[in-house]
Image 1 (cartoon, rainbow, N blue to C red):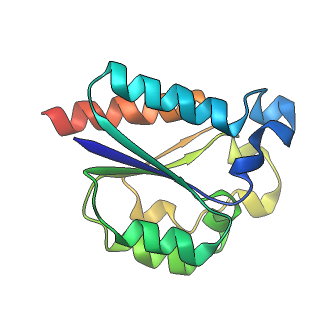
Image 2 (image 1 turned 90 degrees about the horizontal axis):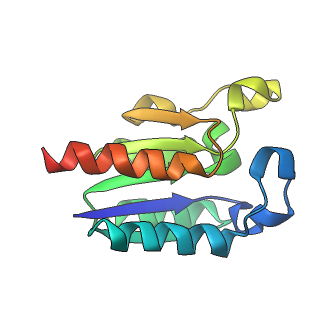
Length: 142
């Protein structure tokens, strides 16, 4: 079983962002924790991050995974191109946000990719990734 995580713009700067919203971890710390989690639970994990919309679309289109977790960052709110790429993915997919987008600025409250994802996890901090993985793993193992 292979789960792919795609992270969008500014996630690579996680540790520099508002600590009350994004926590103290660096992006590398998060990736290391996720890779250890996958190893301990015996599944393959691929993590991809880009600040460029086209690179994210290319990564979605590779379709070499059984499930997808996507934190498209600000692209979640306006990228119809990423939405269209996600719509073609038949594997289970979860939209993830570290912050609670519904308690933030108005422009963040609407996501154009939610409609083409199976579920949304928002506001659990970086723990949301682990929640998403556990859910997808249980769904794929049935």
